Amino acid sequence: MPPKKTTTGSIKGTLIAKKLALKKTIRKTVHRKRVETWSTYIFRVLKQVHPDTSISKKAIQVMNSFIADMFERITLQASKLVSQNKKRTLTPRDLQAALRLVLNGELTKHAFSEGTKSIIILSNATRF
Image 1 (cartoon, rainbow, N blue to C red):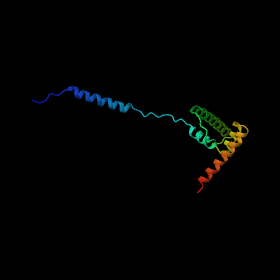
Image 2 (image 1 turned 90 degrees about the horizontal axis):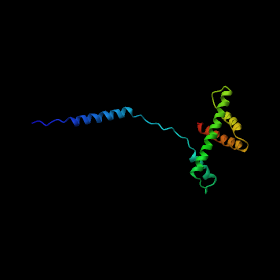
Image 3 (image 1 turned 60 degrees about the vertical axis):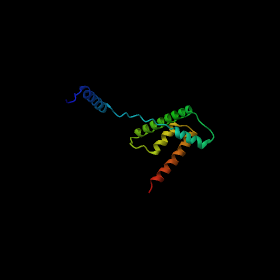
Image 4 (image 1 turned 180 degrees about the horizontal axis):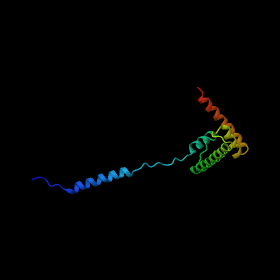
């Protein structure tokens, strides 16, 4: 006598196969938005200036938001200057002009010197 065929096993198998196929079609890759953080650089600079001093996570968050805000202000001002001059390329000179407008006094001088150092390092690195 031949064995009896059960329909529940085949129905169950097809339902599982349909669910898997549906999951594969519905599943989309979730891309997380990248969050820029300056915390590692804040910590490095702190250790260069004051090696024995520590900083809390809350203070790093405050410094991170401050740096992000200043970065946004400087880039916005630089892009306004470039568009007012009817140019398409942002040059170091445009950034220096934006720094003069956004920052005041002694902070501008330090920013100029650090920017000039980084431009020199970059230009030396790109030479062959």
